[in-house]
Structures are given as structure tokens and as C-alpha cells.
Image (cartoon, rainbow, N blue to C red; front, side, top):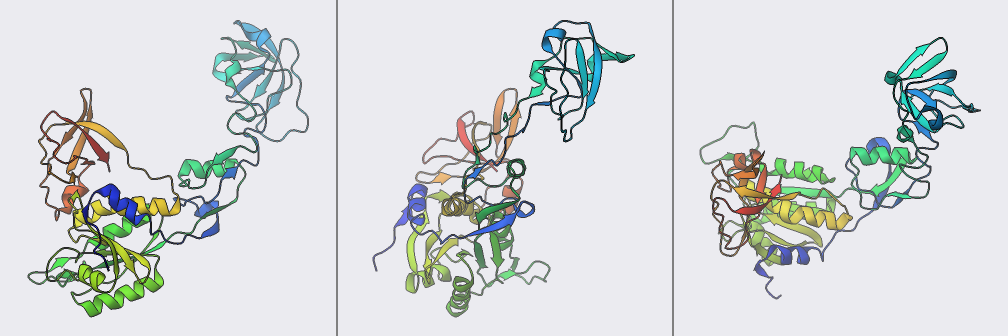
Length: 401
């Protein structure tokens, strides 16, 4: 078997991994279940919205030609509420209809005057200001029947779910979420809450990765930590490949004697690449175990998060056609110097402040890849290109977290 690409650029790693996407299926769910799901088909509106011209204000529906100047006194003829009407009244010259927000416009009316700009007495209304034609919401101004309101791949945010309901949909066809195994490796790992002996630490990566998976719209399956043993690792990888769509491992991918994930993938798996030009996070590998895609993430907590954000998350979006969530990249002025590298994309943890002088970036924390607090307290990651100076005062790209 030829050696896999070694120490490659992030874009090359993405291109290689995108050649090995999981099989995707669909399911139908209700609107109540739709939060953060991924639409699998274009949605055409089943209705015009609004379905009729209606008032954007509580007030009076009037003819603009009677009310373009103020003050003016008009006769009140009827009250129209936001509910179904069999017959709409007709506004005649110098007449007004009391109307509530969302109620259909009476025939002949083409303007609204808000209630707070009126005085009412003896069946008449005095308009204290000219009426407003733009206070009418026109039929179909939000969306027209047959228009595509959302495209396949749309991540269903709260506003998009509301749009689905507005268009008349009770149920939606969506991408079935992937089940993603999370396997942490290392003899030193203990579950949070257990007693620690000297040399042991609490296993944290699987919890953070599970949350990242949920935010991406998929289902995490956390396994208990695996001891540094080829037999133990083989057993859990076999189980994960049979029950999950994707495998994430944490730890064991570097060049040490006990980096068993790398060793077992070299001996028994199918590695597609190993090591990527990222700092932190350079040791990851990608390949197949029993034809199941596997991302071998570094064991240091910051590195595992960074590699997921930069490599695994875009892969999941590609697999499902999802249009988000896309990280927001902005420019910021460095207020502390950052150390870059000669050959890697460098992702330092930054605090961001939005000021009248512009967007300012600070590096207030120790940047060790084992220091998860530096990521938990950060607002952004630097996107320092190889050999970029990172000097105070330089404008750089940062990715908001």
C-alpha cells in the first residue's frame, strides 16, 4: 500500500476527505422537531403571504385622497378585526373604518392612520397627521405562492422554521442526522467525578466533541475511554464501524510509542492522510476503518476542538449539503504580538473587542494546546498564514467562535 500524504495543507486535507463522504438518508419530521435540522429538498410556498392586503397598524383605514393633509375629520363606518370576513365593507368618500393590525383592508381604502394619531368623538375621527399608504402590507409581499422560500441544505434556524410554517408546511423532509462515534484513548484518562490518582486526568475531549456534533445537527455516541492497547482499540473500532456512520478518535495519532490509533490505522485500516499544517492540531489523520470514515483527532483538548472546527465540521457540511453554520471571519487589529509558524496556519485564541477605533484582538491567555480554558474564554481564533508577522498593530483575519 502506498504511503498516505504526509503533513499537508488544510485545503488538501479537506479535498481528500471530501472524496469519502458517508451515505446520507432522509426522513420526514414535524415542525416541532425541526430545530437545527437540515432541509433535504427545496420548499415552495403553498400560499401567498400575506394572503390579502392588510393593515400594519391599529388605527383607521382611509382613502389617501381624503387624508393626505391633516387635520381632517372623517365618518367612522365600521370596525374590522384580524379575523375571517365573508364580505369586506367599502370605504366611500370622507369615511374611515376602524381596523386592527393584520386585518384585511376594506374595499376602496389605500392608506392607514395609526390610532395614536387620531382623536375620536361622536362617531367621527380627526386625523392629526396625514395617512400612510406604506402602512399597508400587500398581498404576497413576504412570499408568493410557488416561490422557493428555502433551498435544500438550509439549516433550520428559528426564523426559517417560522418561514416553513408561514408557507403552510406542517411536516418537512430533512437529512437524517449522522451517528458519530467518539472514542478517547489513553491509560491516564478517568471519567469526571471519579477519584484521580497521581498521573491521571479527567477525560474531557469526548464531552466537548459531543457538543460540537450536536451543534452541527448530528448525534454523538460517546464510548468509554479506551486503554492503550491494540486489542482494546480494535474491538471498539469494530463496534463503532458497525453502529455509527462516522468515527472520531481522540489521542493516539502522533509519533509516540503508545500512539495506537496511528499504528492500528497503518497496519489494519486505510489511511488517506496523516498530519495537517495546523497549529495547534497538526497530528490528525483521516482514513477508513471497515469502510467507515474515521477522523483521528489529537489528544490535547484545544487541538481536538480546532481540528474538528477546521476539518471535521466542513466535512459534515459537505456530506449533508448544509449551508451552515458557517464561521464568520472578520479583520481585527492585533493589540498583542502573536507567534506564527513558518509552514502552518496558526490559530491562537483571542479576545475580541469592538471599539470606536475598530475591532481589536488581544491574546490574554497561555496558548498551550492542553489549556482548554484558553479556548473556553476566547472570542475568536487567529488565522495567521505561514510566516505572517503577527506584530502589534497588524490587521489579521480572525474566525469568530
